[in-house]
Every structure is written in C-alpha cells, then in structure tokens.
Image (cartoon, rainbow, N blue to C red; front, side, top):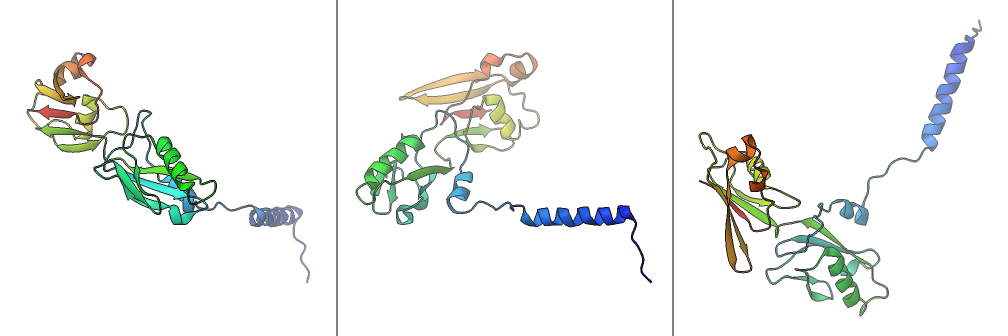
Amino acid sequence: MTRTLPFLTVFALSLGSAAGAVDAQAPQAVAPSGAAAAVAAGVPLAPDYVIGPDDVLSILFWRDKDLSAPEVTVRPDGKVTLPLLNDVQAAGRTPEELGDAIREAARKFVEDPNPTVIVKEIKSRRVFITGRIEKPGPYPLNGKTTILQLIAMAGGLREFVDGKNISLMRSEKDRQSVFAFNYQDVVKKGYIHQNIELKPGDVVVVP
C-alpha cells in the first residue's frame, strides 16, 4: 500500500536536503598555520616599545625558511644570532627597525628578502614590587600601568598594612628619584597625582 506524505512534510524534507547541500559546499574555517600562526602568537606592544635584552623574538622569512629563527632571545649585549647573518643588533630598535636591518643584511644572500619580526615575550620591560604585598616580585610592563594597578596585579596589600608610606624608586641616567605614595589618600581621597605611571625598572616598596 502506497502512502502519500503530506505536502508540508515533503517541503520540509526538501529544505533539509537543500541546506545540507549548501553546508557541504560552504568553505570550512581553517586554523592558521605556519607564518600566520606565528604572527597571531605575538604579544601586544606599547607604542613606545623598543626591543631590550632577554626579550624573545621570532624572525621569519616567508620564502627563505633557512634564514628564519622561530625563537631567539636577545643577549645581554643586545644582539641576536641569526642563520647566515650572524650577530645583528636588536636592543634599542623597534621591531620594524630591526626588520629593516635584517632585510638589508639578508640582501647579500637572497633577492628581495621579506623578514618579519614578531615579539613573542617581553622580559626587558619589567617593574618590581616588594615588601608587605601578597605577591611581590617582577611584573611585565606591556602597557600603561600605574602604582595602584601594580598593587592590584600583585594581589593587594597584606592584612593590617595601611599603605601610607609606600614609595616608588626610579633610576634614570645615573640619578635616583623617590616618589611617595599614600594608598589611603589615593583610594579614599582621590589624590590621583600620587598614582604615577610606571617606567621600566621602577621599584615599588611597601613597608
């Protein structure tokens, strides 16, 4: 005995088949690989960032992989060692400036080199907090950070610490400066002029 499907059922089946066909033909998302994945792995950079010792870089040549260095650390002398190119000065340069220098050096070996410098890890830009804080130690300075923000990053003041005599120590061009920071004044009274923006190498002391 032959059964006739209702019109709405047939219509729904037709739509399902059409949708399946469309899905089968639709391009599928592909995870980035190779150079594209490496670019995505770079850390965010502050506008004034320059490369420093201990920073970890990835230097890639799209068409000349023999020249690439997927991971290289800037030495204390500020240089990195690259295949064929040997030592190249990295510290004190922006990633773009280092890329230009590498491109010029690579012209001796390949035609129209196209290197890309990716910053994988920043270790040269650090600030320090010590004393009666929950998590003392070094912290990366990857963007604008104030004393109050650093205290928050370090887990806050320990119990029974009023924070009235916190100090910021800064060394610039062989000169050391000390800035006072009163936690209570900043938080409760809004004395934001004490909440100084930190610079690399700053040390915050919580007595």
